[in-house]
Image (cartoon, rainbow, N blue to C red; front, side):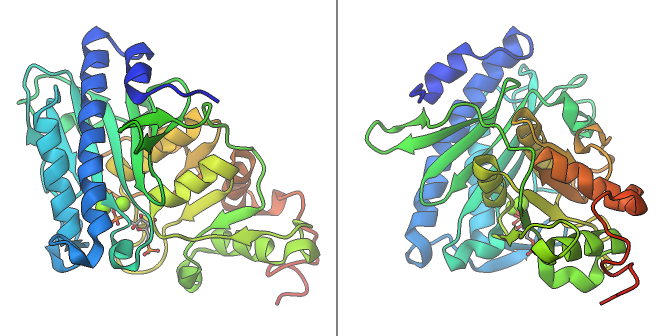
Length: 348
Ligand SMILES: O=P(O)(O)OC[C@H]1O[C@](O)(COP(=O)(O)O)[C@@H](O)[C@@H]1O
Ligand SMILES: [Mg+2]
Ligand SMILES: [Mg+2]
């Protein structure tokens, strides 16, 4: 097993031009220090000052908790000390201009899984590095309107039983764990490979009645298990922290769905493209998995708004492709026996 420190890793990776590489390495170091501070606040739980109390709404209308804002302050401050030109956050309406000489922009979900804050379940911080387009003071948002395929790197911290960093700088997806003995992040696994097949799915099943038919049929087929068209039993997980659900999939495979649904405001699902879906899609693809908006590749979507949402399906590549077929060619799903399921003769 590799035991490289994060520092050693950052010194040896290669992506972008020289200045972008130096900028990114410095930014990751700052983010890592900030994550340790956020971890400390989370560890204090209800004993700390910054915690689960609601304090307003963010740009997307989500309830903002004290810890959301606290985390955003910590990460923004960290980026002020890094060679980063622009900082865009879930918690801020507009990007913040930072170092005009730097060549990278950072988009961040400072605290992912906020609804889990007071339940002592894993939270995360998701981030994306983009090349700066044009002068940083021209249109600050423009750098964030590039498709995710342009990302120079992406990652997330997970505040779980271990504080881990999942990072890709364009050559594989690497997992580092904070070693309390060494006081630094240490690589914990070889670059991850998500197995292409899976028997585990993650979705918020409470929204079943709001989904479109393709998603319902896919889940119905999974739930029928060995007696249904899939001819095998499935397991289900839903942590309600995107970073934690992604971490599990990187470790043991699986597929995650947050589709669009018929609820008001949820036609494009819940997850934000620029600082949630794009970095997760980048990490998943770098680990050999796939990420789509149910049909098309997430990383090719051209963002139009900083806080825009997108349906998200990611994980084991064959399963993600199968879900796309439920949307585009449901009658061609090979395993579906004609008399089975909600579309068959024996409709349940
Ligand atoms: O509560 P729901 O609808 O199941 O949504 C859960 C999803 O929302 C999120 O919490 C959204 O992220 P934020 O907490 O950063 O707003 C994801 O982490 C998670 O996958
Ligand atoms: Mg989030
Ligand atoms: Mg958040």
